[in-house]
Image (cartoon, rainbow, N blue to C red; front, top):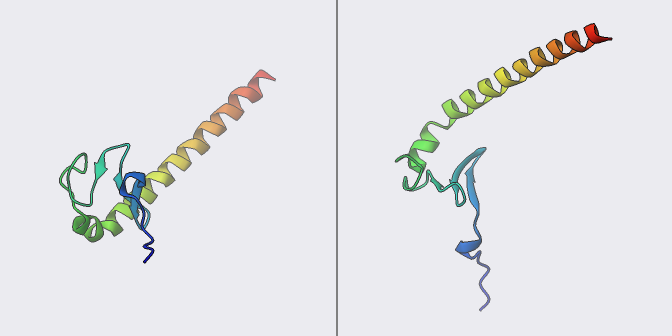
Length: 82
């Protein structure tokens, strides 16, 4: 019988919804809590996902607003040079 399987050595990363919980290259393991997972396991990731997602979105919004500020400053500076 033919078995469809993914060789474990080919797995690069695993996500839970939008969050990377295991990454081979970064040595991140938030599934079992080893390596650079800092002891956080998948049950805690699931439990705290909504907070993580909200913090991520807030950080992205702050970054977007900062980019807008920088762009305005650049336009002001470049406008003065003309």
